[in-house]
Image (cartoon, rainbow, N blue to C red; front, side, top):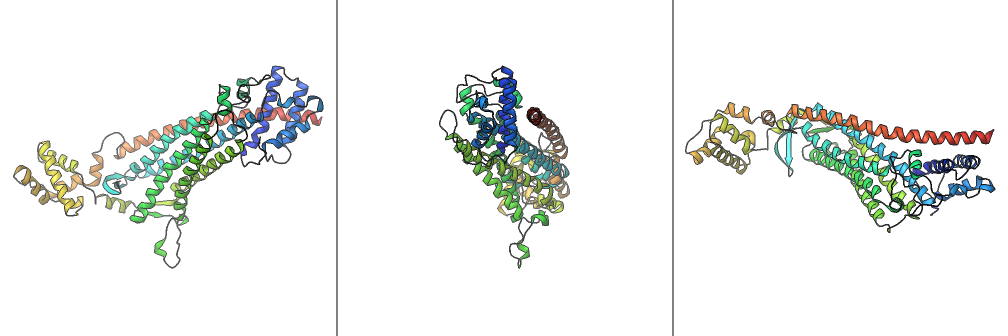
Length: 473
């Protein structure tokens, strides 16, 4: 195994893995209690010294502490490679759950903002053009929905990483092999990777984690990119909190930009790039057990996890701190720059009792005329409708302007969208209530995992402490 140092925090789990192995060998009667206690004391002594800087040093230090008569017993039925792979999975599952917890914090922040703005009217964009009125709460629901979808991938990836590869040996197991299920339980794993060749050389569990983190960052990047474009093109829609704003040229205060939002977009983009690089590295490994490349893999995967942690924590702060919504301006803009033939047709069918075909043709001609004249929906008039009606049914309709105005007002437009997932306020609130309920369950699932892992670590540390007390006595 390579003796290069590693930045991976998995070093702290290496003694735990080795201790669990010794406890299992004791239970199987491969080594007696006296020998097991001596090895546990050696593990405890070695981990209390200088910080472990590489995979080999710790094993050498343990071997140096073991009495000569049981030299080599600590490595019975165990390879260094599987110890490393197991310790890495223990580290990655913890860090992935930390990211999952922050992902829930981000979703909670977005849900709170969406709830507060479930009636804040704004324009919905299609191909960078305002297409119809919606609400800011509904707009944010698109981000929440994307993060919920990614959550399923992240949760599945955590489940996959939370399987023990220990006991695989180089690929076929060992003569003095551990009880693989017992080792998995001792280390708090949810189970084992059952095929030993798969356990020694599969990369797809880790690939799934990298792809989930890349997908999460992609959702964040798309959202922040949209906000930045919106702020650049329509800066009155949102105000940026001064903690997130900077002025690149002191002499041009009007050119203030959100440097920290740009940093967030940059981080999210590069998390995806680094994750893709890690996936490429993982899938470039030859078929079979992974050996000397674990250090390189660990550095790459830990780097992606670190970037993902920074990205999602910054995103949560951005939602909670950065954006100050200009409700009045958004509502004013929502009634402009959009046109929809379907609502005008519905109005003509309801107010004028026209048949659907005639109503749709009149509405289509009226909206087309608005576009030709570069007019906004709010500027549609009875005269425009009458001109279209003459062409379709040969007579004017004499629609009342007040009635028409009430019907095509943005809030009325939204109220008529009474379908599942629509921007209608009660629909948005009902959906957000479901989001909250799902997050409660997801937090519980994460907590159950971490409690299981913590209990396993506490139990093994208690064994090491007991062995140390025997040494001191």
